[in-house]
Image 1 (cartoon, rainbow, N blue to C red):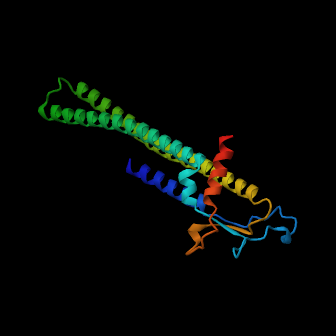
Image 2: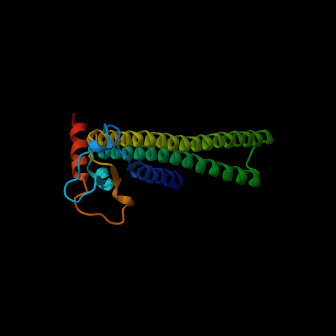
Length: 207
């Protein structure tokens, strides 16, 4: 249980980091470099977005996160249910083995054939448990793999959405660079367009 939790949580963290480490040059539609909108005042044609805020307030990001969390919890419940059932069956098998050994030591079996029959039954049960244990491990791996695939798909969806909106917003070439403030050590007021981006993303998503 701890192993799948660590894997899934690591994937989530890695996916979020990969998604929002943005550093764009977004001026593909400007007819000429000189046609870019002139910066107001002393500001350079640069914009900054706070990706943490996008994660918190972009409806698509919020819904995607909730969906992932729900699927993650359902997977853990499914795996936990199977694991508990296996554990209960295994403990019952161990008890049967102990009872068999006690009967052998006490000479409680009426015949050698009866003892051999019980031993064969326990050996068959042990083989069945080994198969179930492997099935449980296969399920753990499948749930982890499925979750990683869903995470990658949603990560790509969010990335495409944000990039598409930024290209649309900057279609007039007003900004030569749009930066993620996570890579900045300091910034001057006036460059942050995070709220505008979030409002625009949510308005577009609402449609």
